Amino acid sequence: MLGQLLVSSLTLGSIYALTALGFAVIYRATEVANFSQGEMMMLAAMIALVLYRDMHLPYVLVALISFSVCLVVAFLIERVAFRPLLGAPHISVLLSTAAVAQIIRSGVRAFHGNDLGIFPSAVSMETIVVFGMRFTALNVLIVAVTAATLGVFAFLFSRTRMGWAMQATAQNLRGAAIVGIHVPNTFSKTWVIAGGLAAIAGMLLAPLIIVTPDMGMIANKGFVAAILGGFASLSGAVVGGLLLALAENLIAVYVTSAYKDVLVFLFLIVLLLVRPSGLFGTKRLTRV
Image (cartoon, rainbow, N blue to C red; front, side):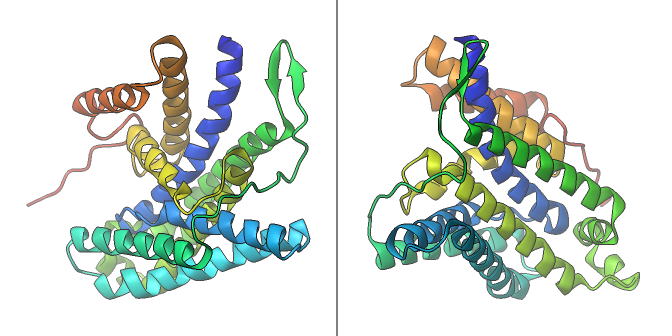
């Protein structure tokens, strides 16, 4: 039972981690939480469902179109809902991204209604049994994609000029501009990258649940995972996602599923009281 719980937690935690990475990437470059990240995931899954089920397009073409649309939408969100608010209080930007989330959700519902659908997996869903633990090729794919994504972003932020520029813009916009960083271009790339992450997470999640206009609510768990691990920490986002999924499954099985979310969020509150910056976050000192 415990081994099966670990397998399930690894899969669900990887989805949380991919969502949390989307939050962390934007925050590391802009110090802003993007509350439309979940709706971007839903948009990718819904586009893929419509193209595959209703228009009968090939799977690879469906994935490419869905991914590309999310990149374009993320670019537009940065241009319309973020860039005009540079210099505004953070709460204004947060409300702007929340409004974008509502627009996307309502727009999808207006276009497609509350139609429910199942999106097929890109790999076999046949059960594999190893040492009594059951899993599928999709479980392995989700974990592998999450691990590869973390590796790519670790390299991006530590070894590339773009990663350095993204971190510099978060620390000091004026200073970044003075040393030659094109700040608007850096912001655009950051939001597009986060949009790509949302598309990947959405298409990986779609075969596991029923695709609906409200499936983006799972991003709330990704947001919690990002906070748990330390909002600006990439590795913390992944660890936070895995720990959150493990805590949910353990509580559901060994305690009660009725109060699963209540107990998980109580645990989060206690952790933040002890470590306000999260497990892997670092304290930041501000001179007055």
